[in-house]
Image 1 (spheres, rainbow, N blue to C red):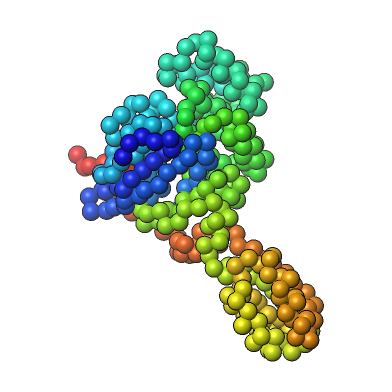
Image 2 (image 1 turned 30 degrees about the horizontal axis):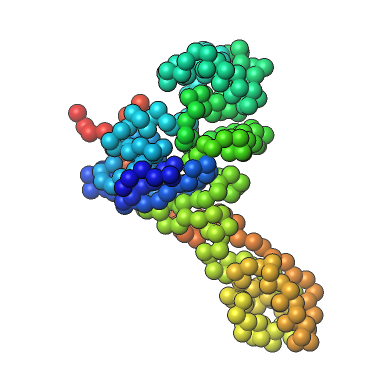
Length: 336
């Protein structure tokens, strides 16, 4: 597989820990400038997949190209071209916000003048210019998260990996991080890979979403495209003045309805692929049969509903592994 214009490209990417396959022949592409979401239950393989893409784990087999570089053959080149914002807050509490960013830029050999210009611009972008010289120990959780996003951008990465960027934040701080990411996508060509358990976050931010389960990508599309994959998922509640049973039998013949169920003496519950667009058809059909629609409402499928349809309702936890906390979950360590 040759490097292409995609920001991330994998082919048959696989990771095994002994007899356990954490990532199973995964192939996908992420376009440049795209915000790409990874969703999945606990133990689905998301963490292992991202660790391979960020060079923290070598693949067992298959191939991955990130920012034009092969993660297996040229991991150092990949690291130079990516930014990684882990779930844990890692900024140094004993340093100021400015010092945290400046030192990080030094790690990447960004020249001093260029580094300071970028640091000023990034602190302004994340709304921390006035607090730049305060110790990070005085920052709130939301401020630290914004600082760490700025820090991860100091070397102008082509791809930014974000792991649960708003977990544990209050609603205002979550919204501030969302706004920051929206600004990033509008003002730059950076590609963002986002791992999150918040369905509203994924729907708000992501151009496309991959649902991962049992080490495989089981669905990949835009948020609206994922919803369309679930047939009859929109629910239409209908209250009838007339012969409800006769109306129900009549509506069962309509091709745009997936299911029709009686819900009491005068109510019907209907399943449809696109609820809002079939409402006029339902009203016309009921009235043409001599009945009257007393009320009608549509309940749209949520991304959370889609997620549950694809992955099931039961909560799963990752298999137990011996890990080093310096390395993190997802990388079993051999016993000494």
